[in-house]
Image 1 (cartoon, rainbow, N blue to C red):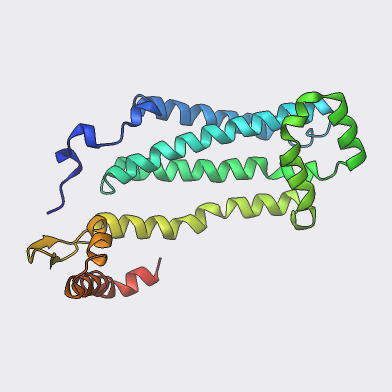
Image 2: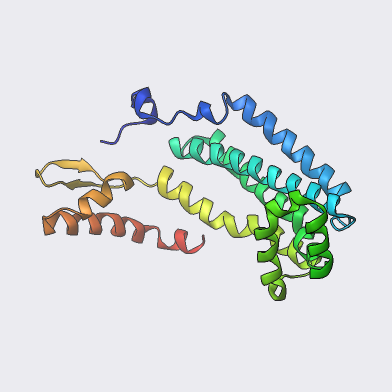
Amino acid sequence: MAKNRNEIPEKLTWDLTTIYKTDKEWEAELTRIKSKLSLVEETDPGHLLDSAESLLTITEKMLSISQQVEKLYVYASMKNDQDTREAKYQEYQSKATALYVKFGEVYAFYEPEFLKISKEVYNKWLGELQKLKNYDHMFERLFAKKAHILSQKEEKLLASAGEIFESPSETFEIFDNADIKLPMVKNESDEMIQLTHGNYSSLMESKNRGVRKAAYKALYSNYEQYQHTYAKT
């Protein structure tokens, strides 16, 4: 029988305090980054190419916020993975996903606006402001995909759709990991054990064809019962 999260020895669990010491710290950081993004939305669009200094400042701010959004998401995702039945951390992951979408919406201006610069002006700024060279590779990649960048309005619309596209995947994960009860199967020692997503792969690597077949049928016959539910996701 698979153990519950609270039955696992602490030394065998993730130490997420290296990311955020407490949930309250995560919540405070989430609020802070949301405020930052609101401020960016008011101040930065339309000003990326005001000067070389402006390009550097807005770029560094974007990359810094991106790292902070990623950190928030990783903590929420790993907390949710610890026990997918825990509603609190399902909500954390939803909030982190929404923040990712918001980040994409807010910075939808960046690529279309950057690509209004000519290579001549860009090279001139690169010579004037040495720190811009730290991001030369990123800028050159943007130039390379110029033909495929949408307008700011279109990029924002695409970013806004991110949460919609993510919802079916999240619904499936919660249902599959928290609500589905998998059946008992026999292992190589001919013992009846609880089939889990965790032990399924090891059972499928068994040298005993009967064990592999039983595990496969047990998992997918279970899915078959809920085929209409899965189809809706």
